[in-house]
Length: 426
Image 1 (spheres, rainbow, N blue to C red):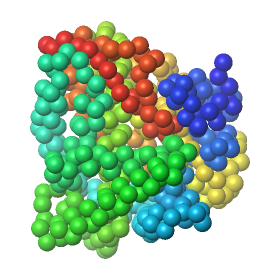
Image 2: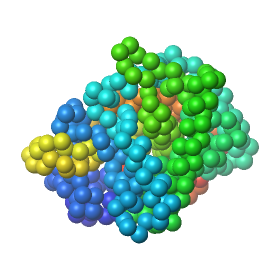
Image 3: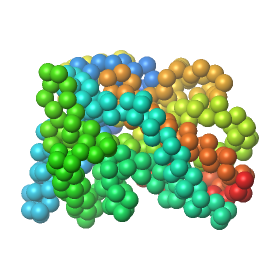
Image 4: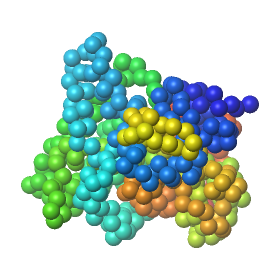
């Protein structure tokens, strides 16, 4: 039996709860929709209506710590506070904290957030995203070509990782030979998210990769200033708006970190969860294969029921109330999108995929001020992935018991670490 006290076990990344947090979320929404967790040192908010109210109120609930205390910046603060931290690692942490003094997008509030978003919005315009479609379609088919003759695949490393990673790397002008390094950078920036315990050796490896990322893109930004290219990096360098200062180097570096993580890890997790569901429900796969018009709705419903980011953080700027719970100024708040998306008060029969109805908007891409800039890129990648996998593969099945599919050890980032499948080429 799941109890609300099991929240602490989820925060500690208990494998069973990370795999299936839904019963716990049900209990929390019913018995303790706003509750303080001592391990996380945060108020945990699980109802849709409460999450919406917090997202609306950017004055009371700041985005200064959107990815939480275990992010790279959070780790840097821990290192600086520890007198035993080696000097080299301390210098790396200080570099990160200096960059954190120029927060961007996810970590900013109005009016700074509005300025930054307007400066970069052209890079994510519908026209830009539509131009990506032929390249995404070509890449999807190329990845399927690599395993279709085998009759089996580990979908995560062979498809779900390289698809969004290659797309965002291409957008940033990263050459193909640097793809392995690109993935290591992404891993470094997400390693701490939703993992409250890190070893000293693991932290040192994270910051080595972080430093390499900053060095590489500092040089690339300076190169774009004299040699513009048709890529997202040049868009950042050249972004201008009447009456506003252009982006600083530190702002651009921080934006690149967010594009890297948001454009890579989250879509990887969503692709894995989507195909995992299709493999376990052949009737669903057949229905969508026969009617491609259902694919966009399938993608939205999967983003709802299996949010790749289970929640984001806020900080109370003043004494506040969420629901009927007092939240003191300075408190950290974890908004659990993964629970809010399954709130039966908003989504009848929330665990079912409704491909015919008209659901309320899910919170996977957040809402209002901080709605995800790259949402339509993720939708494009997932739509084409589902379409081409269903067109080219039949009888998609898990090659193991569903209970044996390994998940990432993170209460924030949700997705399979591996997904072994069998299939028949069509």
